[in-house]
Length: 357
Image 1: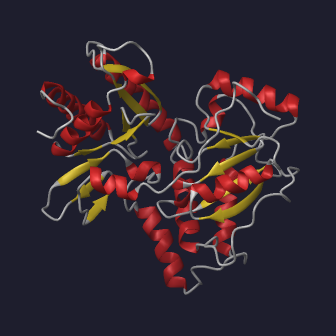
Image 2: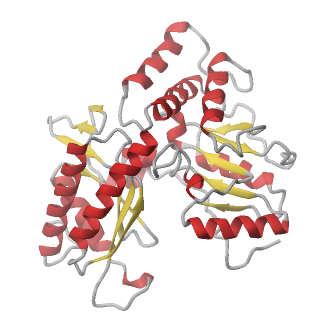
Image 3: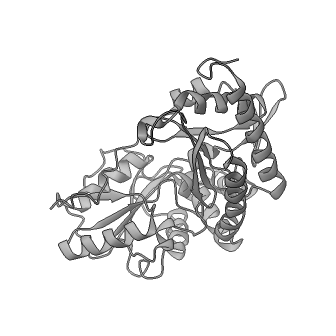
């Protein structure tokens, strides 16, 4: 049954490696934390974090140690459906982080290496009812949606692919609203920088209609499970979600204060360390058509010239996205904002932001 006007269908995510390679012409040879180094020795602050997959930044010591432990043990790296101590540790760490009202009795289904795999399985859990997959954005909207789905007997499936593992200031973004979902789609950061995707669902949710990945699909990646368990434990033990909320709020306030007098910035939005600056054409009326993707692309180019890697998003790629790792320091946050400010100044001074200067 459809929930007209309240649900946005979440498209299957597609690999964007080619897009990033064209827009970010960097050949990284070394990386640690938030710093990426090219073959010429030039260093960049990575404010994209693998599109959110690198919760702890590049090559964090706890992640490297967890991967080395599996490699040195001689255990198999891929085992399909067989249960292993590595998988058990990952599941235990994952369950320990889930919202309290959701965790008891929750089932974990390994789906494959990508979010698209997990989304397909999550839709199957709805058994054709309406598969309403949403990202946990506005708290009030999510609460209303929870009421609507409960009244209609429709499972509420929350996609935490980008928002999860502490990025928004809570371990899972759905916690901000107090809503308990029926299922959660998890990918990117849960693999500790390695490909891993799972669906966690209510125990009594019938999974008979969920699609089964093809035989041989990589669902038992032991290295990803080990890296993911180490990441989940580190974020939880060091309260990095709370830290992301604190430093993210500070960055958001500073961005809004700085952008208040810039007519080319339509909105500065975000939560925790998931921030975005919307660039617009001030000569046009409000609405989606007002976006200025050419200017946003020019800002990204100017950021790169200043040693800062950012992303683009939004319906027309008119939003500059900032996704620093949860380990970002105060000094690094200051540097990000400073370089971004200079980049915007340079991009807006160009007579034609569509062409590189």
